[in-house]
Image (cartoon, rainbow, N blue to C red):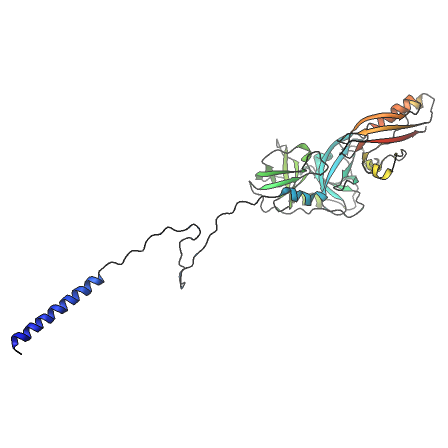
Length: 375
């Protein structure tokens, strides 16, 4: 092979090598395609790599669920066996006011607002089953908390509630105010929202988004889980009503002296000196079957022998029968003479006494009452 041929082949080989190196450099400098920026799903956020993790983890979030509706009607049904309607009477026997309370022990202790009992000389409690229990008086009293504890005559173990510490009593939270089934308002509960929680020298208070009617005072207050977290009382200052929380209930209950006797706010009134309103008239037999009828009466004082008859010097005996009609509110609508005692003074004394009788609110009904007057 000639030198010229060898030189040609070497030149050709050099050109091939240069071309190959150029192509390799061009491939290495070509930029890699950029990953497409796809939108992230609200259900699956962008992957987050944890330091030291072998592979990234994906956190899946769920959309916010709507707030669950609270069935306060069902909660009220569960709490009602412990709630009572309190009827408070003046020394004369006239109905002074009604309020709400609730049992906090199975032996008959009732918590209510102090304002419910002010001016009262005696009282009875209407239980959830319609039975009437005498109240023997106040066994713990706090003007600061506007709370009292009453002792009722419990003849059997009574359903009661145990107040719980409110851990979620924040503004905007729903609460239920549970009244007595025997109150005039149906259904016997109110739904409200907490508008403000504030500290007070008497303890934490809750203010509500809407006002409550007067007869709601003394009612237990429950949260969304049905736990009793407070009681409706008078509010401080210009606030008509507020909710004293469970700590206040526990404080007043702790003040009860197991050996203490019940008292009343009326001067001179004691549990021993006042006749029990729910016992019924001891000398006035009721017509028909006395058991069921007597259980419907809240207050039934015996007519006294009239002083006018005593002063006249003509102290006569007299037997009569009177028809008493009760309205749906438990008040006497009318008293008529079915059989006269044949003495106008005795008849008038009977009518005046019967007009003071009180019955369990409900439907209208009429009672025939025989009365015997003896000097």
